[in-house]
Every structure is written in C-alpha cells, then in structure tokens.
Image 1 (tube, rainbow, N blue to C red):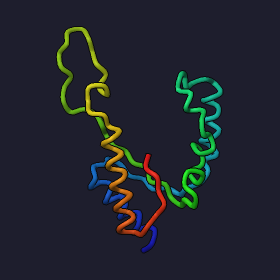
Image 2 (cartoon, rainbow, N blue to C red):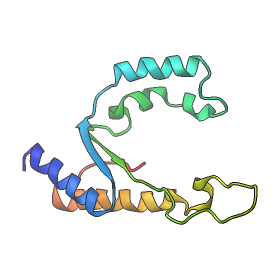
Image 3 (cartoon, helix red, strand yellow):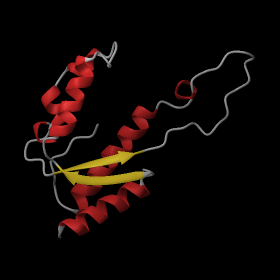
Amino acid sequence: MNSRTRTQLIKEAAYRLGFDFVGVAKAEKMDEESRRLEAWLNKGMHGKMQYMENYFEKRTDPTKLVEGAKSVVTLMYNYFPKEKQPETGTLKIAKYAYGKDYHPIIRHKLKALLQIINEEIGEVHGRCF
C-alpha cells in the first residue's frame, strides 16, 4: 500500500468517526515553531500554565514522542455544545463548562482510529493525545 492510499484510508476513517478535519504530515523537528514557542515561553505568555515549559524537545519534535515515527496525524473535532445555555438571569456560563467533557469522547475516537489504522494498514506504534 503506498503512502497516498494510506493517507486516504486514515482520512476516510477519521471522518467516519466524526472528526471535522484530518491532516497527515511528515514527523520531523519543527525548527520554526520551536523558535516561536521558546520566545512565547520566554515572554511569559503561558501565564500559570507552567506545564507548557515541560518536555520542550517532545513538543517540538514528534520523533521524540514515538520512536521511529514517520508521520503525524492531526485532527480537529468541534465540541461546541448544540444545546443553548439555560437562562439564568445575569450569569453566563462558559460553553465548555456546560457541555459534555470532550476529553473522554475524543480519547475514545482517537483510540478507535488507531485501531482502524492497525487493522487496515498494519501495526503501527502510535500514541493518542
């Protein structure tokens, strides 16, 4: 199976699982993004999100996350709640706070996609996050 066919299979499976966008790219160090992230961190733009400082090399080089990585699959999933916010007078609740927690929903879909890839393309060493 050639890379174009594999990419098409991955995209079709991801769309069937409900993802809104699918991209497949070569796994390689992201030099330009590394410089931008480093500058952003140095300016303190991450506020109280101290975890953003952790694992800098892994954040900017996907081959450090999965040994032997050749490709990265990037997905988009719209978790905007369909239901309208209940009328509470003057209080407003952030949309992410009154919808379902998207973390377990997306994790389940990611694991399902990885399983499809393993079954239809062949076993790959992948991570879902």
